Image (cartoon, rainbow, N blue to C red; front, top):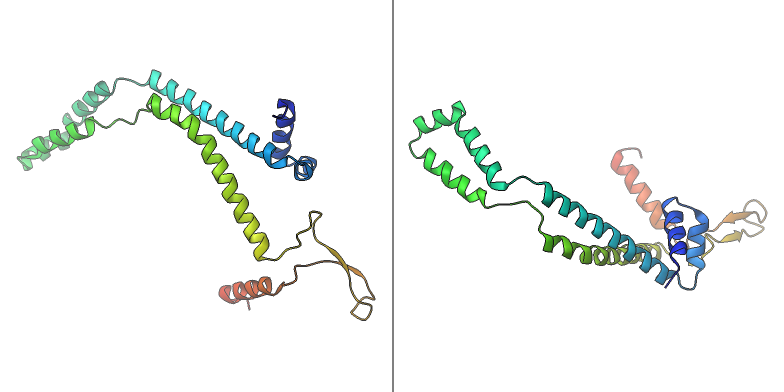
Amino acid sequence: MEAPPSLVRLALGGLLLDPTAYRAQRESPVGMRRGLILVLLIGLLVGVAALIGDVGELLTQPDPQAVSDTLRSGLTAMPWYEQAVEATPGFADAFEQFFAQIGGLSFTPTPLGSALGVLTTPLVAVISWFIGGAMVHLRHRALRADPGRNGPRIQREPAGAGAGGALRRGLPRRAAPRRLVAGAAMQLCGCA
């Protein structure tokens, strides 16, 4: 396993968008493992923080029955309640039945659910990381970008083609789809 200072440096470099951290991660022979460990540790920290927050909420929350009783007495003391009871004879029974049904609902976090969140948060983070990486890989292949690691290719134009063999940035072999999309977008917005 990686040394914690190395992972902290990697996390801070990624968070601060440090190009040397990205370059070091890309060129590392164990880059995938380091990234996986980092994503798991961040997911674990988020899960533990959520657990602490849920326990704090559970400890500081008022009694649900007291809240329900206060809400019921406040609503029944309002003028609209008296008017509704006078206008509709079955309103009071329906109101009490409704209140009995929603009285059992509780939005209080459970300790079991919070503990389960500590385990599922890192797994969801890793799965999201893999899905995101697969989507970027597929997009990269669909645009047929240069597979080289050092950015776009530098190509020399032939001597008879323009500026006498000047260097230019290499584009993917098929730049036509990009032009088609741009042309379609301009037609849609009415710019063309």
